[in-house]
Image (cartoon, rainbow, N blue to C red):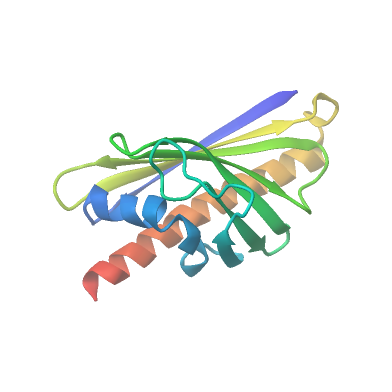
Length: 160
């Protein structure tokens, strides 16, 4: 196995608690702001939240990846941290695991930093493959695009 990790961050001109509400309480509603997510709903396989989260997971329909099973694996409201795994029907077989952690950190009353730490586990036999590197790079770019979309969504809601 080989692990690739990428940390993306964005500053948002909104209070950390408001961003946390979108990411945590609105966990099922990410189709409203995430590029490529066609639909999002509660995951029937994870009906109960973890460590006080309102949701245990979600099922998604994602452009290019198809149906996805997302499960919250770590949740800490006081530090505004939420981690989840994602399995999707069209993820290449050489990708063994996708794990993302969102963290929202206050930068004053009306500003915060959101980070996404995406870790992708790739089968050892493919870890040096140019094709695998391209797919992993695309997934890292996708999480960066999600952060930008989150910022745009939240700041538009705040300005409205």
